Amino acid sequence: MLLARRRLPLALVATAAVSLAAAAIAYLLAPDEYWSRPVITGLIVIAGGLFALRFVYTLRADRRYATLLEREVAAQTRSLMDSLAATAAAEHNVRSLIEAVPDAIVVLDAEGRVLEQNPSARTATVTPPATPPGRSVFEGLDQYAATHVRTNLAAAFRGEVRRFEVPFGHADGSAGVSNVIYAPVRQGGKITKVLALVRDVSEQRRTDAQLRQAEKLAAMGQLVSGVAHEINNPTAIISGFAETLLLEDLGEERRDMVRMILEEAQRIGRITANLLAFARGGSTDRGLVDLNDIVQRTYALRSYYLSTQNILVSLDLDPANPKTWANSSEMQQLLLNLLINAEQALLAVPPPRSIVLRTRVDELNVLLQCVDTGPGVPPEIRGKIFDPFFTTKPVGVGTGLGLSICYGIARDLGGRIWVDSPPGAGSTFSVEIPRDPRILPRAAAPVQEPAAPTRSHLKVLVVDDEAGIRHAVVSFLERRGMDGRRWRR
Image (cartoon, rainbow, N blue to C red):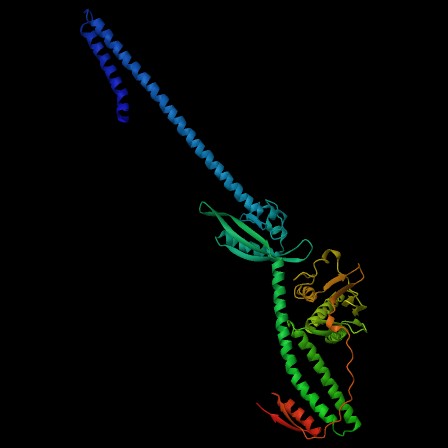
């Protein structure tokens, strides 16, 4: 059909040409004959009509072609506009995502100049530090950081994806660390720029260091526990033989020396008992705890270090014998954390330095306070000091766990902990814990007269895995007139 439509204009033109040729031949053969004029005229009319038909057909065909062309152009235009709109929407979405990313995103050229950046990069304090477009990121870096960044940027332009860390300084002067990723951007098979992703990982590094410090403290607690157990056995042996020697008829000078040996061995035993009580943290067993005893034993653990730091400690203990139902190792850990916190605060101020450990009791609660003359707690961080891993101390000095552990222990006991710190007047950490009905005063038991020592011959079986302890106990029993038998496993 289409082929027939294309052949029709050609046929009309051919017919018109044949008519004109026939008219011309008739005119040449019989120019004066009567029949030649109508024939020639008719042929010319036919040829003119055919040419007219051809023109009309061509005109209509041109119009149809123009209409089809307009429709095709309109369709292509709509398709192009849709593609441009989709591209613009995709670009908008990508740009919105990039602007919403909290990390700094920067596009760099081979010289380190900033080509583009997202809002986070314009306000960031990480590396590159808020460098405006057209400026080099190396301008705000020290010599070491600039060399490190330049080396990684050159490697990225060679096609490598680089991941590295760069130290920098925060606006407040504290040290920070930024994690940087350089990714090459290729255009036409060539690397024309590098995309830099920068994240401040200072807090993460600080948290990691605190966790490592907490693990070290846990390992040290286990070590202290093992050492205390090992010291206990020889201490018990020394105490046993010293008590046995005191049963002998010694001169006054020798008795004083043996008594001094016994007292020092008992002192070692008290120290190891305190270490064991602290290292045994985590037990849920609770009993009636004397706060005054806790304060005295905890102070004994730190007394030597406190004296070397020229820190005077005063014990203000309530004579009403404040007791509460708690876990003794938890209470000792709570007070030790408060005491260490006060020590570290006092190291920042010149002498004189002092700490007061105070206990109070009323009808409902017992109160434990640790008062220091340090610089105090600034108001802006007073609400954060009990948060886990929050610390104002340098990395490696504090873990940020001490006060949060105190808060957890006080809360578990149904009490509370708070701090009072007037400007320039030191700090007072207070722990208030409810008393337990089981500590109400009871009727005193009647005092019984001590029974007269028995004169019967007793046999005692002594069982212990330490040969020294077995020997010391048996020797003591034999001095008391008993028959001691040692049993070995």
